[in-house]
Image (cartoon, rainbow, N blue to C red; front, top):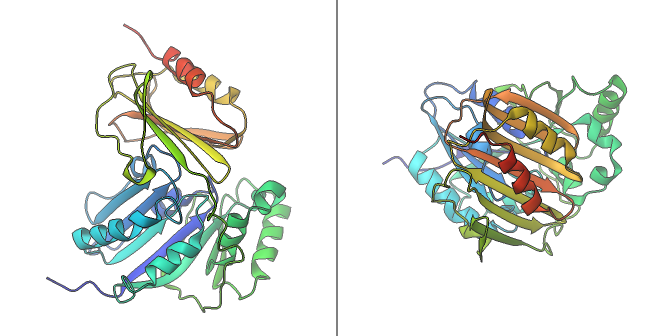
Length: 348
């Protein structure tokens, strides 16, 4: 059995909704056919969706999803064991880690460089995706995790430049190139299109977190409801959805951490939604940071993506079940949302 050592490893960070999963899909499309890649995806929400969204080749890619908190804090104790199992099983030629959008990279970097992985992993460029428009949002700019995602990155990708103004792009590029230590590269991108060569850039060192304890006092809670009327408390690292929900009786999970609230639903694959009705529900929600979902609708299976008030629907190949995750800055009225979601279903 070949020894696991010096596996090229990258962390791809960026705030909520900046396009990390899209960028990883773009990188996977460039993967050499003779290589195996391992992808570890971390989601803040309780319902894993990113693994369903990743359009991976038929072989040569092993994906592991960790949902229900940040691997830098809530799921920190499980990161080492999960990563070890993923590496043993896949024996990859490259490892890519995608933390949640509110995840602080410092703890992940420390884990990858500790005695457990020092000889196994070769940490290369830490890549941060940045939407130039986010620099207009003072609440985002003042967020310690947002600042350290940029500060600890070796490469900055200015993504979604097709949606930003020239002034916003120019300002973001100027600010990124002025950072010290200098970045290895500052690249403009649309739809997460980046060159594979960026993965093998090596950080020059000297990068330090300004807010290493940004998540240390985070309040974390979660609940798992087997049906809308039954609840039980569980710890985040062990949250799993193993049962299949019955038609029109979804599972729902909620969590809270770092000033954000999440609530997610998993529906039976036979539940079919009216797409126009879904759009109306999502438009009516307030204080939204992120909505992501895959739905079986009257217009086929679709992926829904919303960042604050910017939303898109697109076709998706996923067919297992309909699922939804909502992240907000205030507690969610989950019963009302679920009632409205069920009202969108076709009934026989």
